[in-house]
Amino acid sequence: MTNAPDNKLDLPVLLIVEDDEGLQRQLKWAYEGYRVIVAGERKQAIEMVRLHEPSVVTLDLGLPPDPDGTSEGFATLTEIVALKPDVKVIVASGHGARESALKAIALGAYDFYRKPVDIDELGLIVSRAFHLHDIEQENLQLETSGGGAATVLGSMVSAAPEMLKVARTIERVATADVSVMLLGASGTGKELLARAVHEKSPRGKGEFVAINCAAIPENLLEAELFGYERGAFTGAVKTTPGKIELAQGGTLFLDEVGDIPLPLQVKLLRFLQERVIERIGGRAPISVNTRIVSATHQDLDAMTGDGRFREDLYYRLAEIVVKIPSLAERAGDALLLARHFVNLYSREMNPKVQGLAPDAAEAIDAYPWPGNVRELENRLKRAVIMADGKLIGAADLDLPLAREGSAEPLPINLRAAREVADRRAIHHALMRTEHNISGAAKLLGISRPTLYDLIKQYQLSA
Image (tube, rainbow, N blue to C red; front, side, top):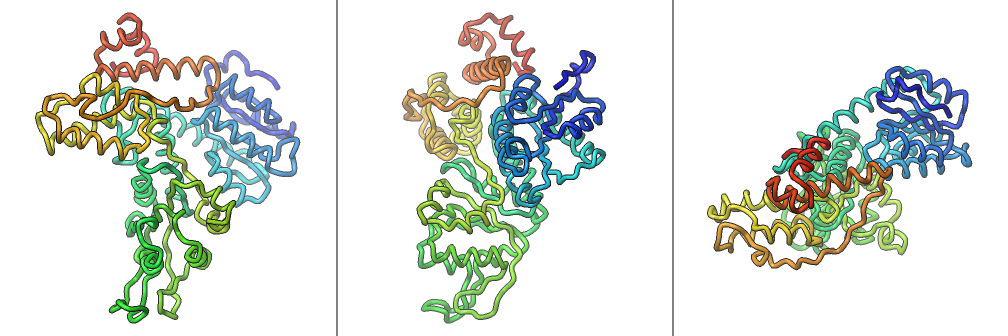
C-alpha cells in the first residue's frame, strides 16, 4: 500500500478495496481529483477507513480468505457502514448479480457494479457518489445547525443523523420497484415512512392503501385483503374488492405484518409470486400490479426460526429492510419534537401556552420514551390542553427523571468521537436553554467565547 503525495491531502478520499494487485494498480491511477487509498483485505480496509475517513469506497466482494465467494466482502461492507454510516460504498462482484445487489443495498451499500470492471463507467458511479456525499453533508449541517424543527421526507420532524440516514435510504429505495420492510418499535413513524416510499416512487400518483393486520380479527382479514364475491358467505350482499386489488397501480402497506396467521401467509405468498389473486367465493384470477411495503415491531427472524412466520414469505417481503431508530436513539429529537408539538397544539387548543419550562425540557431530554414519538405527542397534547400557566412544567407531563442509557454508535476514530460528543453536548445545551448562549455555556461549564468558538468550528447555529 502506498500513501498519497502531500499535495493530494486536501482532496476527497476514495478507498479501493480489491485483492487483485493488477486491478488495484489500474484503479489507483485511474481517478483524477481524488486521494486514492488501496486495501487488499478486510482488516486493512477497516484500518484505512479509520485512518483516512474516505467519502467513497469501491469494494470487491471476493476478498480473501473467500476470494471465490462473497462472505468476506459482505462482512467488510457491514463493518465499514457501521464504522462510517455516511460513506458511499460501491460494491463490485461477478457472483450472483441480482442476489448480491439486493443484499448489498440492504446492508447499506450505495450502488452495485457487476464485473468485469469498465473504468469509465465505474468512474461515473464514483463521481456521482462523491457528489451525493457532498450534498448530504451540506444538508446535514443545515438541518442540525438550526434550533427549529427540521423536516425530512416532507413532514417528518427530525434533526438527528440517525433519522436523516433513514430518510436518505427511503429516498433511494423508493425509486426501485422492490418490496420494502420497515422494522421499528411502535410509535416510530412506520406508516409515515411507508407513505414517503409511495409518494417518492413512480407509483406516487396511484393509491396508497394501508391495512393494520393486527387490528382485524383473523376470520375477517382474508376478506379485507383479497375481497369477496356476492354470496360467498353470510352477509356478503355485494361483490367487494379487497385492499390488494384497491392498491392496483399503487402501494399496499401491510402494517404489523407479523400478525398475519399462517394459513393466510400461504395465500399472500402466492400473490407475491404470481401477482394474481382470487376473491373469496370467486374462480376468476385477477392480475394485480401493486407494490408491497410492510412493517412490524416484532422479531421476524425469531418468528421464522420457530415456525410462526414463513421464511419464503419473509424474503419476498424484505427485499429491502429499513431499520427505524427509536426516539431514545435520536439524540436531541425529543426536545425538538416537543417544542414542535407545543407550537402546533397551543395554536389549536390553548393559545396562552408559550413553551416548555426548564424542568420540563430536562425531563423530556432524560426520559427514554418507550412509546416513541406517539407517546411524546400524546403527552404534549394532553399537557397543552390541561396547562394553567404559560409554560408546561415537568409535573404537567408526569415524567420521571431517570433515563436508561442507550448504546452509542461506534466512533470511527478518537477525533471523530470527540467531535460527536462535542456536537451532542452543545446541541443539548442550546436546546435546553432555547439558544441562550450564556445559559448554554454555564451548563457546559465553559466560557461564552469558548462556546462561540466551538459553534463556529462545528458550523452550528447560535
